[in-house]
Image 1: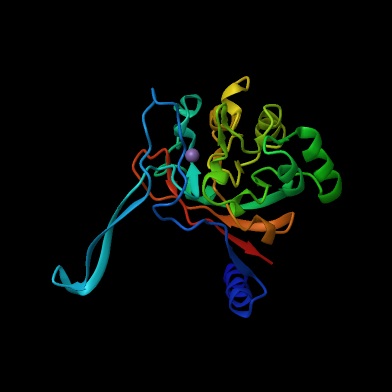
Image 2: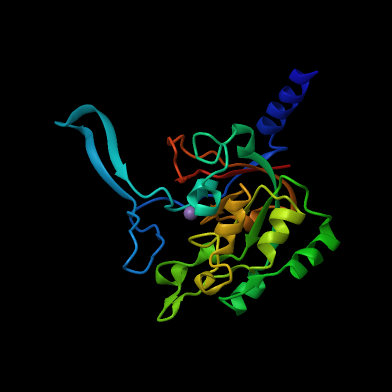
Amino acid sequence: MKTDILMQFAQALAGGAIRVIDLSQALDSDTAIIQLPPEFGRTWPFRLEEISRYDARGPAWYWNNFSCGEHTGTHFDAPVHWVSGKDHAGNATDSIPVEKFIAPACVIDVSREAAEDADFLLTPRRVEAWEAEHGRIDAGSWLLMRTDWSRRRGPQFANMKEDGSHVPGPHPDLVPFLARERDVIGFGSEGVGTDAGQAFRFDPPFPCHSIMHGSNKFGLASLTNLDRLPPKGAILLTTPLKIVNGSGSPCRVLALVG
Ligand code: MN
């Protein structure tokens, strides 16, 4: 019976047989934001403004206003974010079918490679080697790239040099492989965005945006705690705010691990 499945689920949560892992970075004014060349529009950093705190402005209550761009901190990328995804039905934060916000995850650990090479790119060959060990990536799964990049603080996170940012990401050949041959639901990264820091030089530029969103698939950026997930078997909860026609949203990404 359906109720039995949900009761078993509730008991497994209460008893600790299923654990909940927070894959989100804390959000404050230090949260890194995407830096674009000056000719482009700018995203706002996260900002918190106190309205009242049990004081004359509100004697019994504490609350804040906040402002930020949609793509701030740990966040969800919707297909409408990219021009290639603009015409899909159900492509924005309010119109994506909600079932898609609950999906299994595959986690590929390339932390050793990323520590040695800030420009490390995850290739189809590397993913196929992972599949030989853990089984094929199931359609509808997230592919999460563990780099341990989330442990970096301050300027080390964006790792900006004179020639741009140097952060690991997916190889241009990997994105069509994941989108078309594996039919993933999306790609998740520990970096400030889903693409590599040097992806503006790729052909096509920013493939994890142009091809993923062009395929009506999603992105998750600035993830953390990926070292606490198994290679396969975690379930992700990735609900963005229901912004009307939103291109993305800060997101409290949670993983259920058995
Ligand atoms: Mn984004």
